[in-house]
Image 1 (spheres, rainbow over the protein chains, first blue to last red):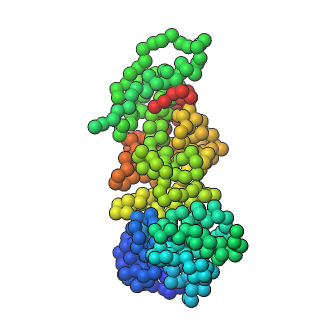
Image 2 (image 1 turned 135 degrees about the horizontal axis):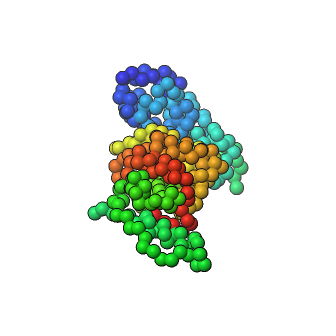
Image 3 (image 1 turned 180 degrees about the horizontal axis):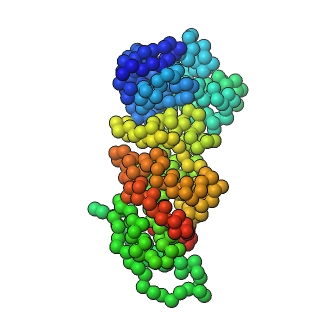
Length: 153
Length: 218
């Protein structure tokens, strides 16, 4: 079955099973490997992308849900790593092993787009589903605050 | 092993006496003892018609039967007392942690539909149905008595502006309600069938939509 969707601004026509997880389409069909496979059960957040600006877990999202919509992955967040979150991530050296960080940034980007000046409580609630085995949570929160232009405490 | 649910008439009688108070309590009389029913089954409206000749008493008994669905984990887990849903049976707090948000659909980045699709995912075990969301806080059922749930369902300010007829239709036909009987592997379905549940709610409305006493239990 042929599906059409836009991925990082590029129109894609795909001959795939409509029930195939979006994550598999991104990684195995389009070779966009920045989005990671973590748990496969929507429990860790490593596979987070945007569909029409909404945060979704691509490991459990059938690709047909993205048909005719715009998908944004970590590769499409900016052309040159200039998104405020990416700059903040680099400035604060947030990643440790780095595996979860694409998902962390994509959740944070969707969150900041709708909550430009969040409180710490809002940050914690929206980021609660993105797990980091290295425990970089304090740096993640600090980077989100920095990207939002919130002064250090 | 099948679990069974005890007699409706007996608990109704106890509740009625407690509500009436000592001065007006009727003399003890033998309570009707309907046959037990398996936990996975619902009694039929015909059963209540045959068992309770008094219309109001029958209506209250029908509502108590309906609460076996309303307070089943498949339903009450998303009618929580607080701002976070429960999951599983026995219920435990949803993992990963989520909050209802301003529209009962989660917070940005952790919306219900960030993970839940329009159908169950058998491999990932993520449950799903159309319009997956939390019930509004005013429709909290967890920890509530049958009496309070009944009063809430009849209150247009707390039932989504529904008439009793629309409540019947919601119970009998709503896609999200239907999920309770097709919850996917590892989750106990609500008792009976959605059609029978709809019949019970319809019979409750048709018999006057009476509410059980505060002390009555399933």
